[in-house]
Length: 259
Image (tube, rainbow, N blue to C red; front, side, top):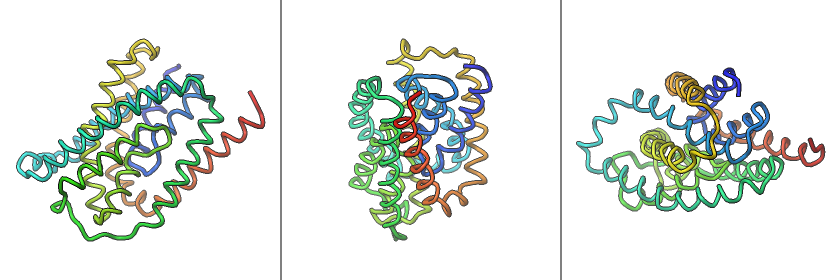
């Protein structure tokens, strides 16, 4: 792929990681169309690029992170949720690797669009909760880890699924977002390292391209967190609906007009 594609990839990851729309889906669609990358490789690359937004999260939440080791409930939440995510997410990850090569972009787009529509209707049913970060407990941490593990699937937004899960458990939206973004640091870092370790023979892109995308995603991610968070909250349902319709249309076009 040429350099401008890596820049766009980093930009998309930096923006969509923090919105209730799957950044993996956006990157997979973009890489498949613009870069001619296979579904499997684009899926793996999208997970690797989540490492770039880890840097943005660490910088933005640095003060919040200093409290983790002083507050037992936060440390327990991170340890338990990350363990559950890895325990359930690993088999899902390997199953996806087996299934993706046998799918084409049209069937994948249709499936992703349906998953996003489901998230849209689920989001409409939730209301404002009463729990705060201080109320997080072992059961909530386990359930959060289950929700986060589903983000390994193409079409499932990590931030969207985890925030929705916390709101269903009774958490206020602001506190649900803080817990979700805090948990994204070990989860995304672990995902990046896993792909780099297990799929080196599948990913054919040069290291220089990764570095460009990483740098762009870190900078854009930091800006997105700072300035677009409130906007994304206000219009989150519209974003999910729009993304689901786009992916469904892409899938239908690929079915009716083969290329």
